[in-house]
Image (cartoon, rainbow, N blue to C red; front, top):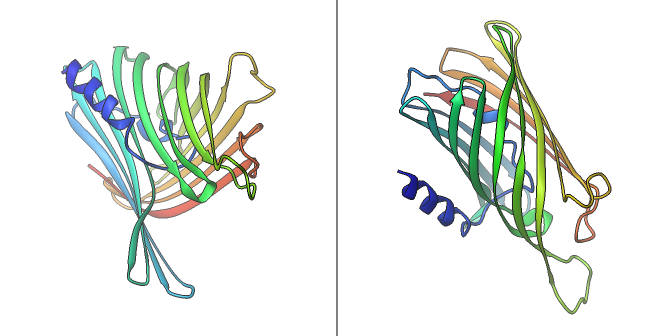
Length: 259
């Protein structure tokens, strides 16, 4: 099983995919120990008219595989397909894989690998891999709270928007730290709020050139398996390697299906 997991992690490094920071914590906080396989789907459909009709289909899938009660393979991916007239393109997405070792109900460590693509921002691709730890700070009927810390390696390829440059692409290779806090608040039987704050930086520029992130997910449960979801993502890079906006914002809404 270990060999399969690391082969999959190596394979992920060559897949193109989506934003500059993933908020996987918002999808991986709950583990049902009574289920071997569990997960969710979050499809979003967008239609607009420009010079041609533009139809965009986005789907975020989250799959957990529980092994022997103390290990979890967590796979998250997002694919975004757009049609512009007769042309169909995969305009975005990401792939994220974790292999989680649950030492007890409150503490775990996990190696992970992910690949992303953000063509709209000028990021040709990004791959990263690292080792993180997650500790549960609060767990009651209303609130679930985790803190995460670790190190990861990151490789990025960006398109330089400056006109007439000799080198159209800029590359970045670095080791960074990751710190995050996530809170899931069950407001009542129908409403659920999940928030995450993230800080990432090189060890030699902890605050000067940091990357900050924030995420808010709101879910309204129609049934135990079906809900309405709204999601907001904010990424703020204090020192981007190419001259682009420092902030990135994304808002989505749609129907979620759990299994």
